[in-house]
Image 1 (cartoon, rainbow, N blue to C red):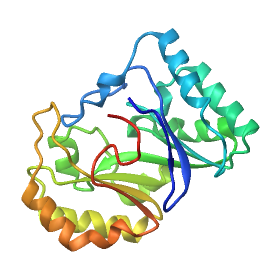
Image 2 (image 1 turned 135 degrees about the vertical axis):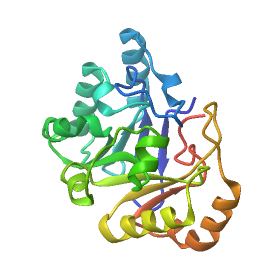
Image 3 (image 1 turned 60 degrees about the vertical axis):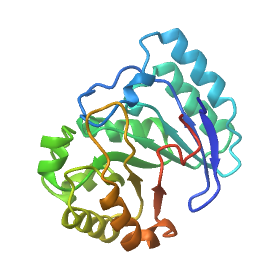
Image 4 (image 1 turned 135 degrees about the horizontal axis):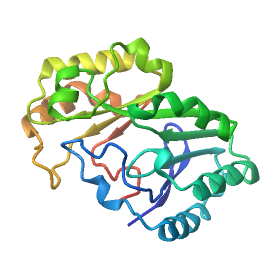
Length: 229
């Protein structure tokens, strides 16, 4: 399992994949990332310390991800991140949170005390597909409500049941309302939710230009950030 890497295009940054407690939601129908969760505090702290020791601060930007939300990291790990921010002169931090933690996001921003870009797994702006099919439990009623808490939506493309119209709308909302986001091409995993290769082929033909748009990270595979397996 690769847990540290440097992202050298678009927004240059270091990225760490840390080990966290089980996701508080853990019911998304497409997600098997929770297999990296742990209930052993000692194991989490030890692994996270080893990973964070690789951070150099060379770009002044750090992204912290785990298989849940940042709120599932041990407090000891959060304190270590904060100390690294100080010692390595980090000025910008990316972290991810589920919608259920929206009312605590500002508290976490204040804890770190630097510029923070908060990502969240929206997957799609189609409310029915997001909550009834993917079971995200992300129940925002408008883009304005989402933007009250989060800066950067993560979208998935190429899931059976998605339509071209849904994806067109997703890309329109992303590019007209957000200065940062992540587009991920869906990959089959151990869940019953399956990939739609024909839809992905259409998407790549129509939206390939987003691969070079500096505002958006574009992942053809979940491991394109250089972490995970």
